[in-house]
Image (cartoon, rainbow, N blue to C red):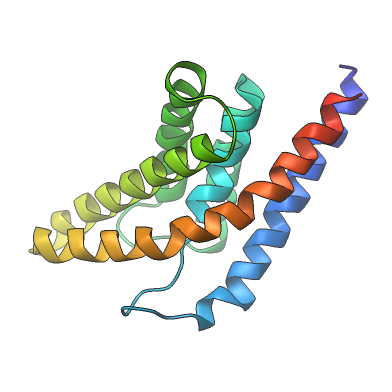
Length: 169
């Protein structure tokens, strides 16, 4: 793949991520079920990693986390999304390369792992500043995962389309 084609591919992935972030920010924040909102950011970070399975995809998840940290910082840990998506991306890379074939099932599994990493890291940040009920946090994380995972199916297809379109080059 030429350098130009690689740059175009990652620009297309970035545009897909931007469209999904806008959809989450404009539409999905209005959806509330069981007291939680869908959370697509972990899916956006790990789906390209499962499809591409290379170092550039891992860098995409790190830079996506950096952008998320700059746009919506988490109190208590300035680099929350960067760290969470780095760990999630590395786990997704291992998952897609060794355990599950790349595709929709792999994207769902990687998103579930990423949601768990984000929840555990958020629990650790909260536990450092105040007492936290772990069972309530686990219940909240479970509800969020049940609401977010079906939407991962919809998030998978634009990234898959970019992957297939750029592999032909």
